[in-house]
Length: 501
Image (cartoon, helix red, strand yellow):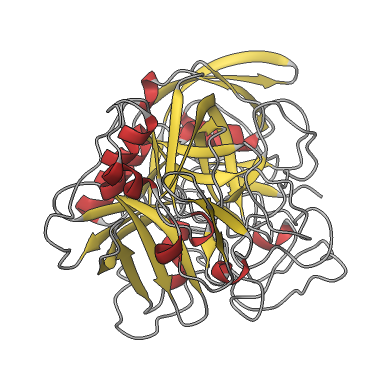
């Protein structure tokens, strides 16, 4: 049996499928919602991501717990620190636009908030440009396992050993300490780090069931901070967000808006310390070239103000982020880098050689199979800043995300090249929404989309990732095959307001 998913936007999860044909959403395009403010301590709210009515059609790994509770699509601790696990692809067919897949290997998932093993869409062979990777979020409890990590003093005379439970701020020499004692060339990595560290922050998200640590950065002088949505997700439902600057000063924050599908959230600082609003300059991710320098700043495993460097390894890498349960959270047409990115780097800036933000560190490919801690293997992925800037400005203005859509479902079991439109609908949602963008362009159930604009489409995630680099109303040439014949058309993207994950 094929599992079919919708291509495009998101709505409120749990609504009856129908309407515009977006996954699980009857909400019409343009319908507004109040901006979320789940970081405000205003009492416990409802569970953010209601569980689907149906459960997994596939059995869970032998030792993996399967619960009937709500399951967040973001990296959360295994029980008892968060919602229990849901596995299988059928569980979210009616409600979620993403390819849910069980984690590879057996046994319990990674430790709290650690990235899991990569997962692939069911029924598909490995693709050159596709593939699903895991969120690079770090949650609490990582500080208890840092024994044996070695740092060095500024002059390099003797190493400093970090014991379990020791304070990072009192034992670790960071890049900000280096620049106090030594002057560096402004365009060196040290010089770039010295300028960027004051504008990079560590975000602590504390909720009733879980807590987490991630990274963010100052977007403007009004006190807006950009980060990943999965970084702040633990604080949803009356939790607390605290932002910590590189000098150790702190201030509270709340969520201005969140876009779960884009995995972007915007925070607003409350009464930040004087002189701390140092926005980072923005670059142009469209002008990034493979081989360009890349510098990542974040708090991997709670080690704040960590700076790593590498290059841009690839561009336009379609990535569908997934947590350890195989529940997908977002799609991105990512910048790939070999700069070390680990749990805790999520939401942090990826800089170019001019110290400009070119991406938001968001996900990693990991070789962890659940038996050990996941970490960098030189395959990190960042949301391009041009897309992130557009989404952030939208959230600041309205608090609500808007997604471009095709108005169709895809057959997730299709194993050939391209993304196939489903042959059958799901409940009240047809494979192609009557009067929607795909229908108006002449696309039909069973068609296989192989090219969108100038971009070759290898699989379903590649199609969604490419669509979401555009905006509603964009006219895009589409190449597709029908009954073995190659055909072309032009589609005008529709829109969908709000999230459904």
